[in-house]
Length: 111
Image (cartoon, rainbow, N blue to C red; front, side):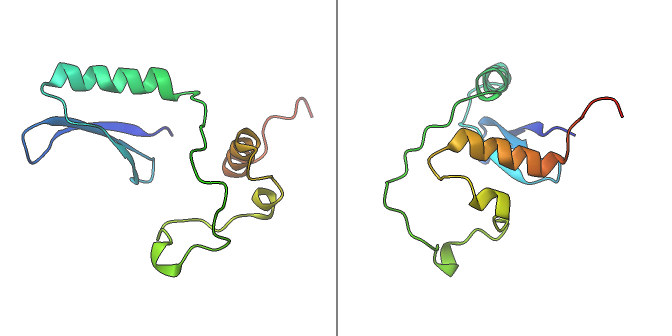
């Protein structure tokens, strides 16, 4: 099941959309749009640009070895062994490993 875009009106009467995961987790919230057609065009742009978008790592080179307990995200998943074997700089390999772990074994051909 794929995520879903939800179009809504915010507290300041602007149109926005949010992308939700299949489990209902909000993954992204848009900027404010003046009208509904502009918000729908924003959804179209996100679908077009983010589908296979590249990852740009803007984090500083020196990172903490362990995040403080207060900063830990309550819904974060502990890394698996497979995640730990991938160098931090290789984001494409890391993304493939996460997808494999999430989707399980793929089609392996005729039995």
